Length: 577
Image (cartoon, rainbow, N blue to C red):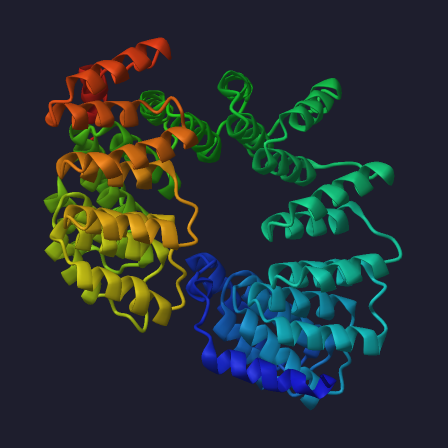
């Protein structure tokens, strides 16, 4: 690709990309706006507005106070511009979130001025490419850097590493990294973050090893990434070593590194250590609190997660979107509709009602708490939906036995903009199973999913087994299971076994039970289903044999569990609303 192609890429980006939401962010106060205008007016009065140096200073003042339009107007009115003029406005665009405009101005600088860019301009322009995820434009900037000989400047090299990492081209990022003569800690951190973000955890660990080998001192960014790796890989021993290093060196944990340590212990299943680290943090922000709440929720301690939220509220820390999602998901897991209602009112008061992820969490909570009508009302009032919204509602209808509504909603999806995915068809096929729509089920499975490029998985085939079984087509269900290449799990086989009990097909039931017990010899549900099937057929000798077998294996049916709502928790939430 030629250097001259840069303009083509920038123009295509400007015409096809929406402006960044940050473009409208106003950093200026009324006082700074008035001061800029007063200084500008004074220059005009003194006939000094044509002074390049003074105009540059005013442009710098404008962009730093968020008055980008005024800076642009002054720039356009300048009779002469130098390198400072161009670099100041390019940097101003970038820092005000106008990355594409920064790239367009750089193109204009190259094609319509006598000023040659320096290393500072290149680092800003490359950062703009990263911010806009403009890989092709970034490659052209790389070519410019090579042409002008700035590749050996560390901040230009770091900007290139960051750009390639943000654009998911880690191979090019690594090539740039290897070409830097003097790699600093920032270079390593950029590469480490890039590999971690792209899920290449092995390469990320290699970067950490290299930092140790090269005696590169770690900073908070390094530690946060290292603990993140340990969490994702569940490397508890490595996490303990790194944490021990921090304690040995008397390094104080800030909110973000502390949160990473809490998350690491939680992901590795060590809740006690996670809580101890959390309690030991001198400063806690919403990230710290939400991380600990997430640890509790992920480990099944939903009540503790909700109680911690109340504790956070009592300290005056305002929740963020993720905090709302975690608390609502905890309510969903506990099926505590009363708590969920109160939290919904509380989050509405805090201004989170229009947030997409919060709306999705509310749909999930109401659906799992048995109030599908409330879930649908949330869906209807949401300003916009994503695939999670549609899936939650379709699967919610299906779970509540409202197959017709689920299929109707599926056909209302704006297909060109929101394509169904793997989860969508689990809800659709489950609805077909509830309604006994065998032909429709096979149409969705064999035609529509294939047309959309979705490979059916065990969940979809399990729905089909349920569909055939409910329709009394047990032999067809068995044939589907034996002929497909799916790795069937106990749930799928137990679905067929349950149908054998309903339709009193003892012969097939015995074969299916044998397969299940080969997969899981101590599966309680299979023993009970088989016993009930023999009881329906009045085969009491077989029932006694299975019961004796269960006693010999010490297999016991798990007792039912009910959750009593904690009134003190309800009262505490009521006080917030």
